[in-house]
Image (cartoon, rainbow, N blue to C red; front, side):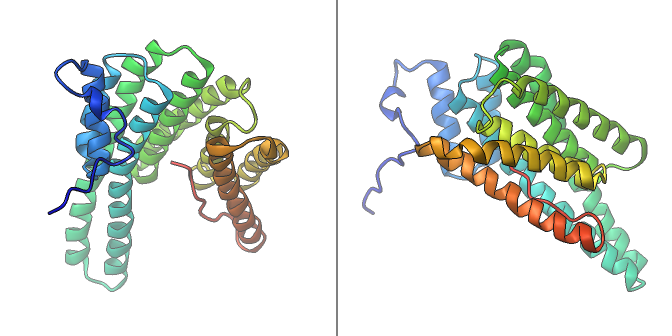
Amino acid sequence: APSEGVPASLGGVDKVGPMATEVERLVYKAKLAEEAERFEDMVGFVTALAKQKTLSVEERNLLSVAFKNVVGSKRASWRILSGIEAKERETGDPARADRVGGLRGVVEEELAGVCTALLDLIDGTLLPKDATPEGIAFYNKMAGDYNRYMAEFATGPQRESAAGSAAARYDAARRAAEGLPTTDPIRLGLALNHSVFLLEIMGRHTEACEVAKAAFDAGVTHVSSLSGADYRDATLILQLMRDNLALWTEEGAEAGAGAGVGAA
């Protein structure tokens, strides 16, 4: 079969030879795993990379992509199984519901494992190495997100703990992001995900709308001054915010909170 060549995202392939550094090898392996959609392998590579150095913007994005895809598939599985389990209980078949519930419990354990692994990496390795406002905001936002994911399936005191941790980390990220431009993707993504947390986990419909609207209004005022990738990234998040605000305003007027779309 003819060769399809090296994907553009695998930049620097010429460097990955006998003289390549360990960091270069790990970055290449992470990009290769992303191309092959082997995201659990990618998590392993970016975790090893994080223990070698302070991550660059590109490397932070690799970290985000790796964990987002692993946790995303498990969150989707959990939602499907939860829906099936509820339907089985409604139809009066507790045995089938229990079997589905058992599988849901397995997924919850896997979700908790992924989230805990990232949170430990953030607090034990990533944050101690990066004292920049961008790094502090980025990693605390991620910590807020992954505590939010745990709050989605946890119950009782565990849910309260995860929600409280998410709130604290979003607040820490917000303080760090105050000095960033209002169009910065980290700042915009933080406001987007924080607003989703306020609505879906805390049930604070009005506050969620206020957080999203303030960030949207501040960002859209200056987005026209951007170009290239910066413009693309900012407008994508602003569009998600606008969609959420439209949905929440409509559903809030009818029956209260509605689900929102997060950036990660």
